[in-house]
Amino acid sequence: MLVNSCQEGAVLFCLLGGSNVIYRVALCFVLKKNQNERQEDENDRARKKKTKIRSAVAKRSPLSLLESSSGSKEVKKARVDEPKAGAVTPGDSVQRDEVVQLYKLQMPEDLFHLWEFCKELHPTTPAVYALDATLGLKLVGPFEILSGAHKASKKSVPNLHLHWRFFYDPPEFQTILLGNQATQHHIGYYRDNPDSLPSFVGENEAKKGYIITQMGDNVFAAVLLHLLKRKKERDVKKAGAETLEKLEGQLRERAGTLGLSLDQKSKAMKQRDRKVVTKTFHSAGIVVPVDKNDVGYRELPQTDAGLKKICKAIVEANSDEERIKAFGPIQEMITFVQFANDECDYGMGYELGIDLFCYGSHYFHKVIRQVLPMAYSLLNRNLFGEILESHLSKRSHDDLDQLSS
Image (cartoon, rainbow, N blue to C red; front, side, top):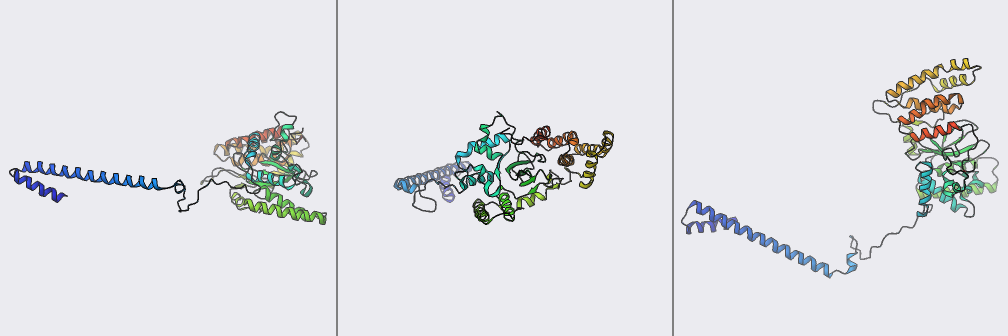
């Protein structure tokens, strides 16, 4: 096109007398003309393309417009999945929200899956008792909210953080299953942070002490582990053994369908173990953020054995004077905790507070209130501090069932 323009420009140049100025004007005129022609050609091609598209669309049937990108001529229907066995139905959403609202804690899906499992297990029996005959376990806590038991409570606003909170249960522990009443055996969720889902399911026998034993990262694993222990008991008769075998199969099948681990120590729990800064007296361990400079936790100046020895001397002191003297090492540790808090090692006060709580004596309540709520506050776990205060105020009471008391 440029060549043609130059040729046309040369002709005009000759016709107009050969002036350089005239040549440049003529050349610009020709270039402008060719530019307009190119634009008209492009517009014409665009109009033809649009006409072709409209024609193609007009020829397509409504069915063809619904074909999938793979070329299938089947009408694409809205997918309606059948709920998996054990899945929570939409009708339970109100109850689920109520559990969260009353406890101020997020509940894991395995809790709701076990609830559905128990409702199906014995349809004619209240779901909270579905595991009672075979395993001696009663579903409590959030399960009672799902059953609506709280609506019949005499208390207008029951304190659910004290509901089935046994003597040695730290704020991190939430009871969901009751076992042997003689030993105050109970199973519950253990959370490292009130804003997070549980880290694992644990068990404790309050009449025997403060140890929390890990039982997997979901309630199905915990129930199965309890069942396997039950099978080993000598007093289980043949008929009972057959019932346990059947229940074991049902638990394994449902857990498999849901993709739940039945290991006592799951992969997620092993990952948590690497974050545990110290086991504490109850052996479940505590987790606090520790940065690359190891800021976040520092050890107590006493070993667990040494701290227990100090606590024993305080509790067994024969006089107030002797007890005050025995408190000396604890007072020193409180000072160390204050220094640690100033330097962002919040785990030190957390450990001391939990250990003294586990020891259980009322002589330590004042110190616990001094160091543990502060640790929770510094770690942004304020709900645990609220639970602790409520528990310490009524720790010696036996009215564990807050819905019926």
